[in-house]
Image 1 (cartoon, rainbow over the protein chains, first blue to last red):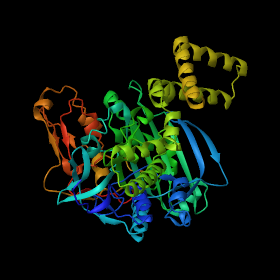
Image 2 (image 1 turned 30 degrees about the vertical axis):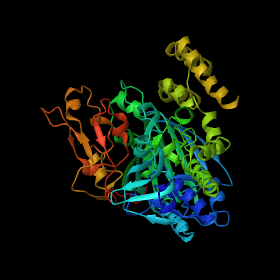
Image 3 (image 1 turned 180 degrees about the vertical axis):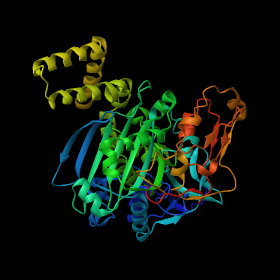
Image 4 (image 1 turned 45 degrees about the vertical axis):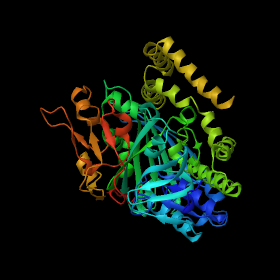
Length: 435
Length: 99
């Protein structure tokens, strides 16, 4: 090709995946330019609240401890919500593998690290299109200019307009996407420590099941979440876009209902809402992976649908895929070949890591559970509530009578066929995960 | 900004907590012929920022693009594929401080 490249690699998007990629390339002395549409780092990004430390260790082996972490998660809580009541299972651990962060501080820190390594950044600039020549991606067209490179890495996030334009990714269907809405609520550090029973740098996370639909409404496929930060708590709801279409309830209405639950309300009392936010999350997993590469182009992170929605794990996969994309770029630069023939190594390498392995493990889980959403988010939460009501109260009819009534009611409300469907779905998820 | 113990927050209250750098040009266009025949008008419900609002006696939603949170839900969820959404120009749009 007779096109002069302005840089070896252009990365579109300065999120964790794009920056991890750029850092990997710059570490080998190759030239890399990151183009970001926002005026500052992290200001267009939003997530629930926590990162796993695993991929960060790989990216910053010497100083991954020094990143701007808020609180290390030492307590994971799974809460079943009913109208007024709740059941909570807690896992409390001495050590921690994850920490809460805010995207503005975290992404800015990553970008600063990248700059120190010689990565160039252009901010305030939206990439409008890719430049193609003879079937190869050879650069990008921004709103201001054309910039040429040997490889373009699309780390543009889930709202992946460019990836779709190239034909690498098909248009996402509502069933394969989650909308997350969140509020950041300011509470003093002392109040958070007291209410959540934490030390200064210790954090808690919560996942909430059920309790979001009103009587007579369709049950949405939706989960609540809550994370503690130094001086704030985030609370949010992730709802399947398919459910948003079906249920015709506004996403922030679900969030308001979650905040009204006594379990949540008491913890957040006197807090001040300092920011509302919304972001979409890929949910299609292994079955909806796009083409990860083509001539002169690679897809990483959310743009490639690399989110493990069973474990709320996205940043980790984004960073890992960015690192691998960076390594493949370095290899292509040595070989001086930027065609599919070399770039297919990205897909090969990615399939050998936990990124694709984990997505494969859970490949049918979400769609299977979606079909049983009224079981998971309504029927069983209610049964569990009924059970604990029985377990924790005294009755002059005697315990045995109580259990008999409970079981009778259970089988009366749940037809055998529904029960079998629930069991089959559960077994299907389990077998998919372990076989 | 609102105290958590106040009555329920409206979407307007929520949007008031946010910082936007507003462009004077919209980044969202509707294919109006498709909107006219759309029965569901799902956009009224799924948008987390209430960008799409239907005035009485109108078939075509008003687009309050200045409130857009750039989540992309409308690109995915509009059953008519009637929403043409582009990224806002560089530096414009929503600007989260605690995302």
